[in-house]
Image (cartoon, rainbow, N blue to C red; front, side, top):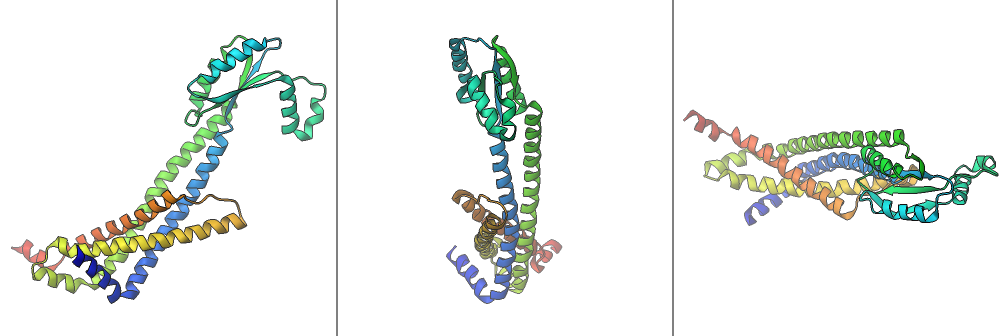
Length: 292
């Protein structure tokens, strides 16, 4: 292992221009992947913020005793899908809310009495159309509930959009990762070809494939880590610029950043492994073995 590390360091010193080109290529490949991840992260956050507004509003019949409504609140709050607390909105509060939310039409509500209601919010993971409809039907079953509204069409469209974004994110993420691995592999293959004669000599003196591969694998990992770190810095700069000039964005947390750098190392390892394996399969010694 110590010899492999020494050989990997020597490779940097022997071909500094090629090593710099490799790291730069890896960095920009992972930068493109990082930008995609940044967009996906912020779209997911935006959808989550919209999903938090999903709620069921049950309108209560006039004259319903306060005790009856209070007992219903406790029952509904005990539903496993429901997020506490469940709010009881009096007619006066409903009127004030309507005037506040529809300020330009506030004069329309003068002298109007709105019905009291029970506002139910759902826990994360229970905001899909099917679950919302089931909870709404359970709330509707109370005899004093006159009507239940939850924006069924809006909830269905939101769920459809979330599924489309998840599927598109998965497909594009895999595609970006595959392209990055191919580019990294092609870049590292240049380094392998540059040392082709050295590899042949090592095989002629009896070096095993594992011994030959090790420096290249370490070289790929090191370039992947450096390229990943540079890509992270570029993505951070892009995120800051977007936040200043366009729209506020959220950047990756420390855990995601470390996973990104580790992903760069993994891509460098895979690219090196594929490139070295292909080269070793086509060395003169392999051809002689095949002929024998």
